[in-house]
Length: 281
Image 1 (tube, rainbow, N blue to C red):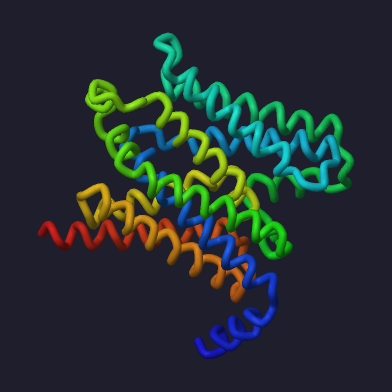
Image 2: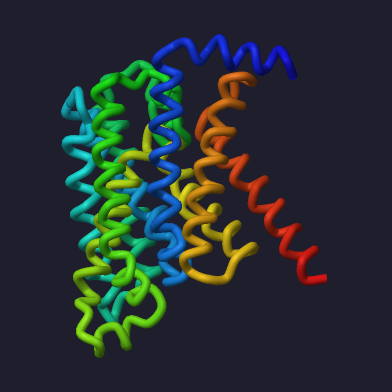
């Protein structure tokens, strides 16, 4: 145990480790805020769908040899979030079918593009790192960290400012619409915010594991609390703690960052589930 703490202390002297911790905490915080809303609206798989879209965007960016793929991935993901919302409202194509249609299509075309126009000698490694995360979280520059900080501040500010409207839309869209709330506009706002979070989280956990950051903290918090505000606050706290522990464990043990964070999220969910069972016995 002492060796682990001394190792962490040694690594904390390096800026790239501090950058990884800052970005990991911010992404975990932003993911957890909207996670409660998505779970309650039974639309939690939008994160999974958009993460596949982001993978397709990364594939296009790699084909075009863009140095900053976020300039392309972020607009593509936001546009697909809007299309996903509009398609999901179509009576002929339900929400879950729309997510499957867009996400699988984007994943397939992304992998196809990476195969046809690949300029890398290690295609399988590039695909694996994009899907499951890589060490790029440990190679962040100060500029990328500041960009993440700015986007995270915007996400948190929007959530706080429109908290009451998001609450209304989450629980009863029909009542909110009858009360004069622009339900479609706020659903669109939620979709755009989730798209931003997905793009931010690509370097942390990879496109296939992003939905875990959205779902697990919310489900864990729901085992302990009942009110929307309490669940949201608890979800944010659990998500931040899990991200911190996951990154630190991955540094000490040499395990993949994304998978380690998700494993910690799963362990926290199990602990919360046990606590809820004990409280109700």
